[in-house]
Figure 1 (cartoon, rainbow, N blue to C red):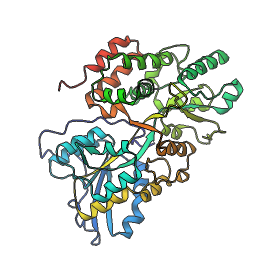
Figure 2: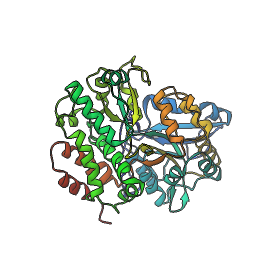
Figure 3: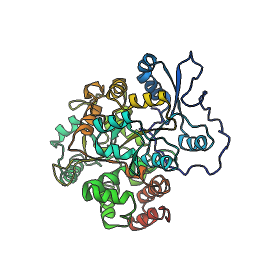
Length: 438
């Protein structure tokens, strides 16, 4: 799977402080922003993002017909070093026309530094018509709307085997208390741990653990506390955050519950997050917690469906009618206000583009004009329904909203230390030290 927003986490970083630094092999697209790029007289628009490999090919395919019809050449460049290179290029006067940001925090940083142009009127109109207020807010900085969302995913899925559930006589839980009872019933029935988990992800090891904590903070303490936690009004050392850690710890730190198919509790840190999928499909593991993109890690031939080999349900809340979820996605920002750039921005914020891209497979969008039937994967269809439900309370991944020193620094490292046995209070204090002094 390509290293995109679905398989790698990106840390917001400070923009480089020295302008004119060499681009270190960046390979910037040719042609000045929003101008004739020399391709038969067409207007050329450059787009830069984190999406690479096969996913980048699908991205380019998604807009090809529209671009041809409108006489616009779109040159896309994907990079795994997006944050560093984008900062260098912006300060060096060579930014792309459009950037696809995987984090609202990084997006806001560029807007605050006056690199980004306010979004055109048509983009803002599309955003208000086809996206929820929560999503529009992620593209708004200090009251100015700079960019519309692009793709989205929902986290907090609990993956399981429908056949095994039937064999064990258990049902999908509707509350967190029922979730705990389900874990105990499976463990008692099978005599083995019910859960498998993997936190290993190279230099980003630990991020799957942050997703667990974020889900519990939102469900146990609500969106207001979640929002205050993201902005450091509620500290990691606050009892409400510790409650989430303690609840997650009842699963992940309990050797009776983990790590099915891999080893003891500490094996969580050495298990690649995608490696849990084959264990679940093979019956060695009963439950795992991961975003909708886990469907791409199951062995070929695995049927992902309600009556298939594996399926998933959303981690429930304190009560059966709770509808809060966490997720992630991208925000599109522009460094150019050329006419061609504005046309591309408007298209990317439209239902037409969302349906084009989703029909190619592998991704979802929260655009309300998207037809869920265009998603090939049943779990992605369910994801779209959740994103489009007006009763859903959506919150962006907290670690992606926090300063990079915390969200992709002390938080990730803290999760690893916690699994390795460091006491919870010490871990929370250590994570909190990552917050900038001002």
